[in-house]
Amino acid sequence: MKLREIVDALDLQVAAAADDLEREVSGGYASDLLSCVMARAQAGNVWVTLQSHPNIVAVASLLNLAGIVVTEGSPLDPNTIAKANEEHIPILTTPRTTFTVVSQLAALGIRGVD
Amino acid sequence: MVKPTEVTRVQELVYELKIGDVMTKRLVTVTPDTSMAEFKEVLRVNRISGTPVVENGRLVGIISLEDLIKALSEGDLEGPVCERMTRDVRTVSAHESVIEAVKVFSQTGVGRLPVVDEQGQLVGIITQGDITHGLLKAIELDYHSDEISRYRASHIFEDIVSDRTSLLLRYKVRARDFTRGGEASSKIKRALIRLGGNPQVVRRVAIATYEAEMNIIIHTDHGGEIVAEIQPEQVRVLAVDHGPGIADVEQAMQPGFSTAPEWIREMGFGAGVGLNNIQKCADEMHLESTLGVGTRLQIVVYLQPRGEGGAGASETS
Image (tube, rainbow over all chains, first blue to last red; front, top):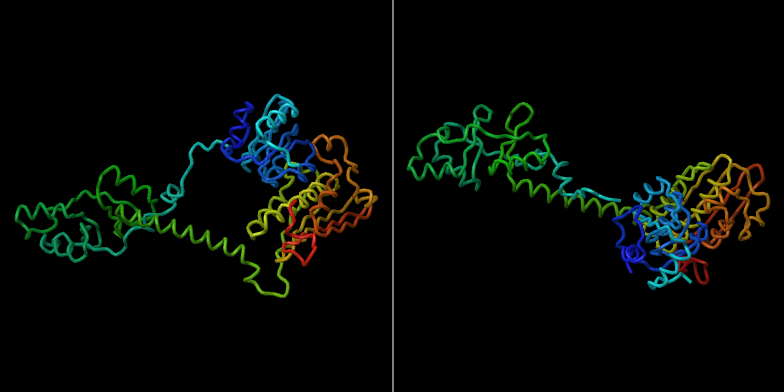
């Protein structure tokens, strides 16, 4: 499933890298601990997190993730958006909680890494 | 990011290339008193459809096949070129961008434009065919230089012969500089990909380096340095800082052990799995630390499998 289809299905706001939504999503991972994400998330995954500071972009870029869903309307640092545009990492936002987003992703057939 | 105007390479080139780069420099000209009969021969011999008219090195007009056809239909080939040439000649300058010539061609519909230098001296002639040809050549050159740089990057270790060749990449890492967090590891990752590294192995190097980089940003007093030594068979990443040092290295290696303050934990760091992550990604890891002096972390990832049972390059993470 393409990231764009997820954006449409979950009604996510695209905060950065709006031109990079055609990536095929290989699975999903959810955590707010960057080290855990570094250790477990796989290339092409969509990452669901509450974190919104610029380092989420560094992590997503290093792991070549398909995109980041920032939950609970967590306010995005302008640096985060600038960096995400630069690195072509889509940032999608939603007022819903991580739990809800993950369950919606699962309903779309997006699987975890384990 | 929204890209309002996507500029193609051809569009870029139309601005980058100068008229002087693509024009025809081999000039065929006639003088004002050349007869139309002689002009006909000039066209035939050179297989062209028009020429500039030059008097004492100065451009005074332009004459074309069309003018010749008119002369032929009137049966007058003995008269001089100056009677039939176009005197009000539109010219372009050799130092202008090709786009200027493109504009004149589309505005005027003329087939060729004389090119003059800064002194107004005729130096060449440009047709739409010259522009197409020049663009194609430039694109081909781009393509070649791209190929060449790719070749160079991935063959660097084969081309340079020594007993032990390595590429050293050094990065300064500043304490508390979270906005640049992950920069060194991203750059090392990019370099390894350019050098043709296996993506799975590159990923392990990237993760281990990222953790080391963030440790320097989060925990040190004055930052430190990351040095990646890339060799054909392995990457050695050295992360060095000058304090504060780790009190109990064995304890620091335990998953979950962390000394990070609350504000760092809030950013999603300091969960204490960093060193653990590094160990999982590395084929070798050496950590030396002295409290009050500093920490020296060495990570080695094998780029090529080492014999049997090596923790090496072929594993999937």
